[in-house]
Length: 513
Image 1 (cartoon, rainbow, N blue to C red):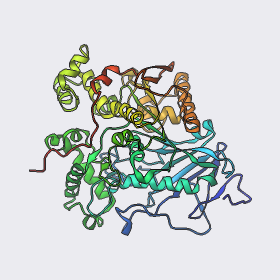
Image 2 (image 1 turned 180 degrees about the vertical axis):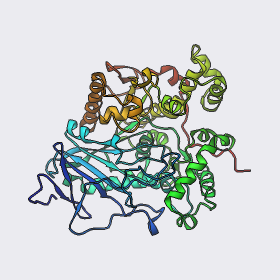
Image 3 (image 1 turned 90 degrees about the vertical axis):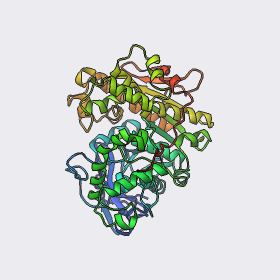
Image 4 (image 1 turned 60 degrees about the vertical axis):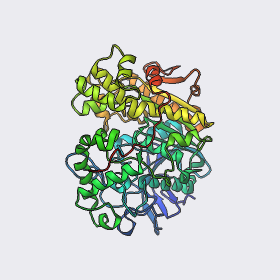
């Protein structure tokens, strides 16, 4: 319930199950930041499943984002952003709402960030949800979850997929509390990008998440899910970086930032372990959801084919040139030669190198490399998730973003993560600075951004984003470009190459010899 008070019009107060919180009015919205949905996962709770937050007395100020979970932020080796708050209260949510009126029962959208399962936090300015909440007249929640070793590494004595369990705990918090913020707990849509989309796909497959949301949006679903054997082997190597075994008893005494450094030192060594870790090795990401048979019983594709989420409305899509962002960040955009292209084709192409070369006879070595990397990591896992949902009796809407990022003369194309600034309207934050060159967005970009929000919020409200559902006869998708249109899936050549391919848990090819 909402607690009345003299300053409620300026600083609204809402009572949650753990205690009252005071937010602020910003741009016509009530905004609450840094509300705990679970206890800090430290001390006895380190590497454990999340626990309900401890109650507090009085009214807690919810003005500032909670501290980021310990994470990889690059070579500096520091956890979190330089201007982020410190502390160990990592597991918090933030709420943007037109009004904290329990009678309003507005649709709710819950954002799950990406970051290769090793970085990310909801306080990132790229995820400022004010425009989504205002344009859609709905409630938006963003959340933190554990990443890196804290959230995803295999540790003996700890549950697998702790980061996913954090997300479930946040969704339970939404069910318990969102009505007080003006939201409808029966109209919850989860949405996420990259590792966030992999998380959305995982939640669709997790029995513990059943009944916690009605709709799901997965933007650029990565196909990387680890088998238990692979996760155990990589976890052993991560712990070895700090001279220990991967057990709760040994690792719980190590400071979180030291475990962050373990991931940072192992990652650049991974490409040399293709014979051992296969397709996972060149990703330089030692973390992914683990198909452990319990928390995540099977892959999302298998779960959806079996009908596990047939009652959930699903919207999925990807960007045409996903991999170009990573090639650019590696300083190799447009410079991939035959040797690297052939190696990528041999490792990832389902029909082998010859099949891709025959399918794209005019493509350069650089273009073949970009094609197969994009297809393997994001495009085909995304499309196959939609097709698996259809096979299980569900309905899915599919999109492809083909509008190119304006920076570098358009050389990035419709690269990975370009959908984030377009959806949130945050063109001066995080990767958008690279994609838009730090300049003001054009009228064309603003129009496309508005269309993104209109489609996403319409889907959250009705289950219909404004274009036809996907089917395996006409394969109609929304192509998001300067002039958005409905058309047959544009990547038909790739679709045929990957037809019948199974995205199974990545295996351990051989134990350390």
